[in-house]
Image (cartoon, rainbow over all chains, first blue to last red; front, top):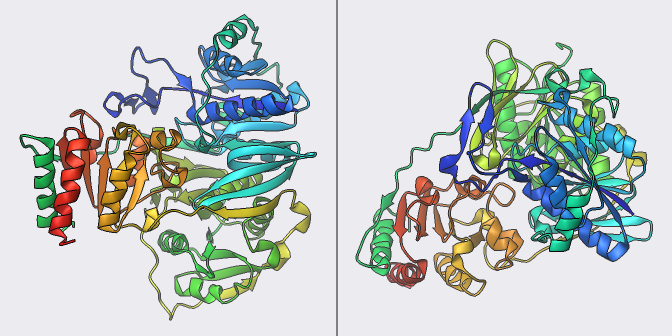
Length: 266
Length: 333
């Protein structure tokens, strides 16, 4: 089985909200200084699921990322977890692509990679949270898309995909090749082993440009975008918190209960 | 571009009735339709659902397209995408609205991929720009740290999914008249590549999280699965439910179905008691609609205090038993 995992590098979402800054003019996030970007949490789960499939079913894992700057770190991270090959898609022309442009660029890269059985993406990128690229990519490639999965089990020449539902889960059987988006219900991703890190560090990761994957310039970047962000702002919250103080936390809790009763919340 | 007219709602059905999200979709759909002076349509897909078309009309739809077929009994991505896409190709709506639900999360991005329109997911506000007549779609991004307003300038249709409970539901008006149009001809059995083998409901103890008036939620600061028992005790006392952060669920302390947040459940209880959780924005996104948030946390700088109405800075292990005991007394239990 050949699994392609699409991963994205994002500003660390665990940064405390107080340090979260945006630049309203460019409508972009200003990453706090000294906090390195990370692999998107859901993409890391997609890598985890790929690694589990590899362990049980002898798969080969190719990791693709697209993004500006030093994105090799996220690919190395995925390779250290258990990925075999990496590809970086980087070109100034790719920048500011929306979900359509991104999915199209990925589709061209996947065509260049050639054959595959399964494409895994995170259910959404933990920065813009759009949750579209996987499904659009599947539509471009003309393959089934199964979204928000927590497990995959091969069954003959098909896959059984466990989809997370609001009140449980459903099991979907799909032919291959197909695309599956992965949710955090997969469970915690493994930490790369020391050997994995050493091996990943030695791997050469090719960087493909627009020319390498023959993209139509009209379909990428701002020109190819279907949607446009016209405003990015930090919502104002007007709550003021009344901190209940007392000599001990237990006494404060008693005062809190009385307060809640007084305002008829309980 | 003007060839695209009207608003289409992809309705959802739950236990033989229009789902609450459908009323919310019709509520905002009607408003947008009025602002554009255009028609509001709804697509209903299911089995034995003919009687629901009139309900949808009474909730404001001018046209109800009904695809009533056993193939549509439960959601299948391939079948539903094909029907919705074919209807859009037939009636060319300017705007398509879906719920940010199990169905909408899957259907909307496939639909936009097929139709080549523009999509914003999880919208909390939708409006028509008075000058451009474009749909402005405001949605949380960066885990809820920021809101983004998005437009689709030329691609059509403009598609949005709406967050549940973010928009006012349509009011019933039995006098509202509309047209019911069968849409079975849009079903494409040949489009079905995937098969839903089974659907498993995971039992949760007590009241459903989304419906609870009281939610006691814990994060990593709670410390262990065993420690969650104290939260359950308070939740039971109040007749509420226990929630948790993504981290606490991932640590296996509590089932994933109890996750509150952007990718978990969205709750809006009267009282949300947040214990040992720092208040990551992706968690706040799931509980910010609560009428009153109470936080107990050791860290006075925790973000949760920014959204809470009342807080205790201290060890929950001391505060929670006293809180539970006092509430028990006050409730006379």
